[in-house]
Amino acid sequence: MIIFLLSFLLLISFALNCFVAWYGYRLLRNMVEITDNFDEMRTKLIEFATHLRAINKVESYYGDPTITALVRHMKQLANEIEEYAQIIVIYEDDLEEDINDNQPEEETI
Image 1 (cartoon, rainbow, N blue to C red):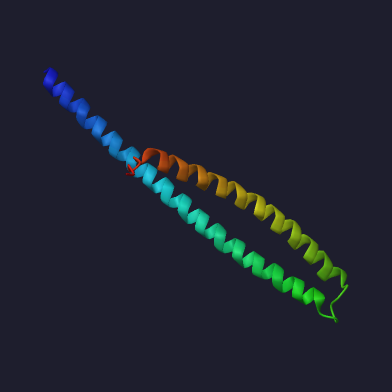
Image 2: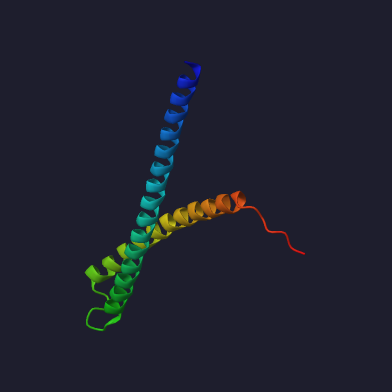
């Protein structure tokens, strides 16, 4: 009876551990996908900001209040994106440190 109960508990524990490992894998995969999508969006916004600045420097549009407001708004948006990017980089650096701490160091002669 005790052996059956222990076997059953071992099976439940194994199933729960497998579920937690699978769930952690899915979370990490989603995080990588979100980071990649963010980097792509950031690149596109930087390209847009560069294009907008180039348009603002063209003589026929120079000083146009609408273009000037767009440039100012783009600068604000770029600053917010950079702040968010720094948060992601800090998180990734912490994650890499945790991974490196868990790996055994090789001995050097």
